[in-house]
Structure formats: structure tokens, C-alpha cells
Length: 505
Image (cartoon, rainbow, N blue to C red; front, side, top):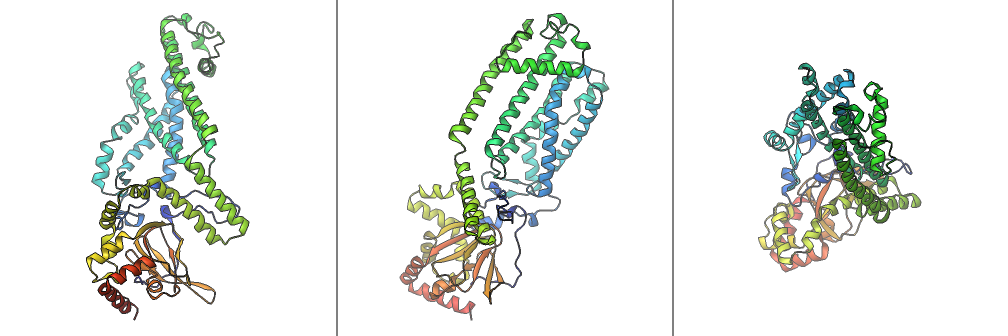
């Protein structure tokens, strides 16, 4: 049995949990809070390199900390404000009061803080799926990617513009760099589309509507700027119907711009507002060509929503709903329901990495080589296999199957028939015993520990229940295959018997 120490049961917290079940029957399904990037890679090396919030270096900020998530959400609200005010200032700079520019400086200050904070936030390597918390690597990665763009989008060009009393287009174009922040909104929608708390179709439609409104807003502001800068105001699209449009209120002019933009986008073309000079005609041509692409994008996405639905994500959500309904209909205990939902969530995450599919398409010899490289060290380090031959370990490893278990999921049940031997590669497991109808935590199994080996080797019911504390990676081999390997290697079988007796004396 794995070396264990007495410990009280503890619930998983932070980004390692799978809170698919919110604790109240019939209250709905919550989000599976296990990021794809944090699903550990195969093999014993994952235990050596994987970072967790309690092992971060000093002064670093865990990227999945709830407080950091609140900060990111706050910045997205500021991005929405920037997306609206930036084109408006670009077109109506001469007519806006000073107040919006003061707000802009405050918003820029928040993004400047985020630039500094980014140097202290670890990132997940996309190749190894490991959290990198080396400050030098964090800084080098940020400096070589988005740092320059973030700085340029944060410089208060409007304040510099007013300082030198300049109103040229140069500063206006530099101020448009703030739209670079819109990439955060794109990432937000990508996360929301996978969040089962929200309806996928609603999120998708919200994204499409947001793109459309932003395009209408930008086109209307740009077209007004063209008219405002034209030498003869009477020969402009807005001056032809509003001769003194510069004297009219800002709201009236802005609504007129939106009206022109929407009627042009929808190809309604009432004819009351149309191009009057070559500049406006060129912009109108460009805008309508853009509308061809935008219309194709909108129609394509809407067709995908109506006809093709959501594919794999939709199947996952249906499976979650079916499991929740099954639990409610059969009045299953809360713990079993939580385990069911967490297992489905974990399966969805693991399938997304396509690790098992990759191994299955390879020849057996190649799969065996990969398994030996990944799992030989952890199997060789288990107490039960101390002193056995290398060939025995090789035979054992090639027959083992890797599995992931969600937090609070039972791997083995007490008094269960011993069908498989389990080896904990990464994670942590509670050893639970039921005495007089009460559940008590006997100890813990840590990385490299065996689970249920006494029941498997002695062919008797399992003595304990083994329940994961956090996301765990486990190697499994069936009892018949294990016993066949032991019988073929009699000397190694005797060593295993001695190791088992020494630990359980």
C-alpha cells in the first residue's frame, strides 16, 4: 500500500476543482473550472515540473486566481468603453468636452498597471502544457510578443495632443491604436462559448451582434470625419440635408451617422443620405465591399448555429444535462452526482488533447517505446517493484493504461472485487475507511504510490476506498495481466511478495 500519513479530509480548492455541481439539487449546472492548459502531460515528469498556486515563486500572480480573473473582467469592461469612445473621438475631437479625455487617461492608467502586472503572471507553455514561472522567461515572452502593442495602445496621445494644441489627423490615428485592446474581448467570447452556465447560441449571437454594431459605429464615425474635413461642407453627404450640421448638437449628428451606416450596411439605401464627392464615394465603395465579407460572416455563423449546432461542445453539454437529470430522477446522493459530472467534464478536457487517439494510431512497438519513456521511472520507483528486473518493469509498463481522475472521484471502493492495480503518477488521493457507517480518512497516497495492491495480489476485497483530492493521473493494469506477468517471471514474483510483506508487517 502507498505510504500514508493520518490526515483529515479536505476539499479541493482553486483552479484544480471541477465544480460542475453547485451543491444544490435542481439548482442547475455550474462551470467545469479546470482550464485546458492545466491538464497535466503524460508521464512522471509532470509531477516534477507542474506548478501550482502554493508553489509559485515569490511576487508572482497565479493566472487562474479568482482575484486575477476579476481584474481581467474589469479590464474587459474598460475595453468595451474604449471601443465605443475611440471612433467617436476620432471623428468628433473638436466637438467633445474635456471630460472624456480625462476618463481616457484614467483608463490608460489601468492598462498601464496591467502591463506591469503581466511581467509577474506565469504562462502555460503551449507545447509542454507546463506552467512557466521563471521571471526571465515570462518577461522575454511578453517583450517578444504583445508588449510593444500594449504600450502603444496605452500612451495618452490625446493628452499630448492637447498639450501641444494640435488637432491633426496624426494624433487621431495614433489614438486609434487603443482598439488593439479588443483582442481581450475575443478571448472572453472564446471562454464564454465553453462555459456551460451560458447558452451557446445566445453567446454566439451576442458576439455577432457586437461585431455588427461595432462596424456600424466605426463606419458612421469615419464617414462623418470625411465630411467634416471636406473644404465645402455643402457638398458632403450630411451637409446636403443639414447645411449647418457643425452647429447641430453632437447627439443629432451621431444618430445621423449611425442611420447612414445601418442603411448602407443593410443595402436599404433610402436615398436621403448619399455620397456627394469623390472621397465619400471611395469610402462608400470600400464600406460596401467590407459589408460583403461581413454579411457572409454573419450568414455563415447563423447557418452554423441553426443547422450544424455546436458539434462536440453541444454533445458535451447534452451529456452533462443528461447526467444531471439521471441523478435527479434516481435521487442519487450528492457525492455520486458530483463525481459523475466531474468525470464527464474531465473526459471532455482529455478528449480535447487527443492523447489517446494519437497513441492508438501508432504501431504497438512505438506505443511501447513511448510508454517506457513516460512511465518507466514512476513504475520502477514504486515500493512493490523495488529490486525486480528491468525486463519485468518493461512488460508491466507496456500493459498499463493511463487515466485521469477528477477531484473527489472514487478510484477504488471498499469491499470492491480487486480487478485492477492502480499507480498514482500525479495528484493526491485520500485513503478512506468506513467504520460503523461513518467515513474516516485513514491516510493519503502521494505521487508514486500504489492503490489497492493488497486486494489485487491477495485476491480479496479491497480494504479501503481511494478518493482523489485533486486532479490525478493514474496508471492501471488489470489483475489477470499482472498475474500472468508475475507467473512468467517467478524470481521477480518472489521479490514482489517479500516487498509486500515488509511494508505490511
